[in-house]
Length: 261
Length: 371
Image 1 (tube, each protein chain N blue to C red):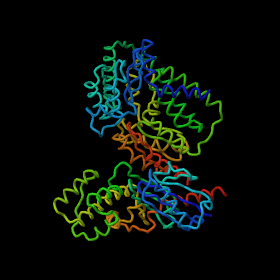
Image 2 (cartoon, each protein chain N blue to C red; image 1 turned 180 degrees about the vertical axis):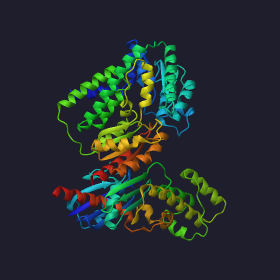
Image 3 (cartoon, each protein chain N blue to C red; image 1 turned 90 degrees about the vertical axis):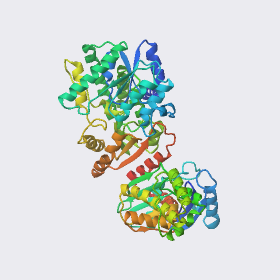
Image 4 (cartoon, rainbow over the protein chains, first blue to last red; image 1 turned 45 degrees about the horizontal axis):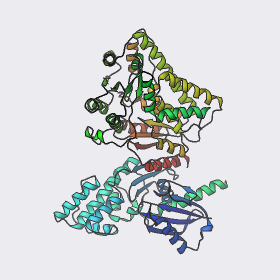
């Protein structure tokens, strides 16, 4: 039995096909999320790269910010639910998911048996989200994907004290004008995101095993800064950006199993 | 029949200006009552129609001249509507002093809205001791004096009669809350209309309509909600918020909302001196974030109510920048979760147009309660 999960975020669209709710048999990702052709491009890529046909899919769940606008899914589910389901599939002992997406951050606590027991969302401010990193990358004329390696070369991290993204932008420009090293500035920017998300995580309660999901999970500097701030190891899987889509496909599977009972 | 009654509640809840125009056309004088715990009984007894002024979902523009951005949007929108002339025709606005923002609202109102006099109702922080009761009584006497200045006439017997009318209204509101809890077919939107319309109808008219609703609902068998929730907060009247509750299959089995059930928990006691009885009522009031209580008994009440009504969770609807509610939230969460009742927090304000984050939050909470 194949189920499809589609995660339409603010900056990317991801698709995953699961076989029997466990095995990832196809996946795709495209830049462009809600309000773009990203979702249809991600689906086209999925069908091109896979031998599975659309008619083979037993059920489809859509998640992410674009879930309400997407036509063609059987169910829609919140991205927190899906990140929890997806994370738990990759890490069976998972207790805490830290999801830093393009425009918000969320922390989900799971009970021992994998049920969601608590969650908190940072949904009003760009600080502590991927958007913060994008804004800073734009000022520094860098690819945000290079932040991790750039920060690794830092010798004297520069603290970013402004909470607000707009004020932090001015602060970074001032630091550039002061002639600070780019590596030190990037390290400070990544720490700034981590510190804000760590505060959110503490509110939800942090229990190991902890993992990161979402696009920012790829940023090693943010991960390391989060580990330092929370004093825990944070697991990272290359599939982290797909956790929402994996969870959506699992959501479909769970629904089908429930119906069959 | 029941749908017709709900339609009437909806009509009133969504068109307060039409209600106000109706009362003024009937030759009555309308006195606006700002949040929270304005002495409606006194206003009613002096020949006025008290009408709730809890602001509205409007873009804040003119009010920003007087208010910083981090001020509660309920208070800001009251000022905005006043400056926009939406309340024109009202004879006065009574503002109680139960939070810091409300204290500033009255002072700003005096300068910003010239045509509608501001009447302060200054409550004591320590309402339980004798000196607190005396202070409350003095506050009511000031309100009476100001209402007399705009044509009202105070009479102890008339106040006693108004207290009876308001006590009856309290009783039916408590009853309708219980009845709706047992009728999951009543939507959150309809429930909100029942409570909100109370601000814009005379107590007698609203009591009669609520009694009709109770009678109709009791004709049909009671049911059990799949996902009962208790909602807590200052104000939960945003239509989009209530639509999301309905969409998520969440049935409100009880509320701890200042604009809803908190209003109706305490009756005026019997007594020869009706004004003293009003002060005694305020002394007896409890379980609200704006009523000083070091023991925070309201928190246990929320948990106990959730248990008693079979709620699966509590949703705290936080009005942005409402300090009294924000102070209580961590305690609510701790006590409810210790009692095995999950808690979700959503933030609202009067200028909100996008509810997608709330949808995501409540959708996740639904999954948390059901998966």
